[in-house]
Length: 261
Image: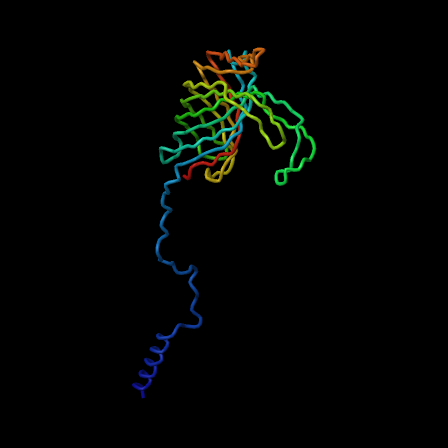
């Protein structure tokens, strides 16, 4: 009888060991998933690049101020970061500045572009004279990419191209733009220094507002403006360009997209 009790008890214990107890406590922490690790993002070829589009206003200084009042224009810059922190970059700048712009209006006939039917008269504005300066520069830039405020500074060297145009035939109708011809052009070497700051998202790739100031030194420049032009009684235009420094202080603002860190 005793042997039978031991056999029954052993069988009961074996059944309990093969099934979880109903009152067993659930573990405090879930099991750890030892799945595949997530690979970090690979660097792309476009990550070091940055760029901006700006509007600008040029203020002549020195001898250039005695001959010209300044003007407005637009520009761009493209940068390529050289280090992993993206603080040191090479930048390429291009800009356009218009100054000495003289406009005139004229009352001309208007015609339908499809049928050629006369529609009446209207006033059309056209440029009598306009002077421009195109620039292209290259050089280093140092910038901070931490936080929302990012100061930066740069120095570049390149070329300035001065060009003057004059209207030789006013528009004869509302569909005619007249005839503008270049009466002077010249190129000279220049260098620039500038500083500014950018404010925006903490991620440079999301963009930021860009504002700054730049000094441009055109040491040996040849340029023309209205004071350099004279017209004889027979209608012949004579250009006597200025020669010397044409230094410029430029204030600009625009939108910047930074490199990917």
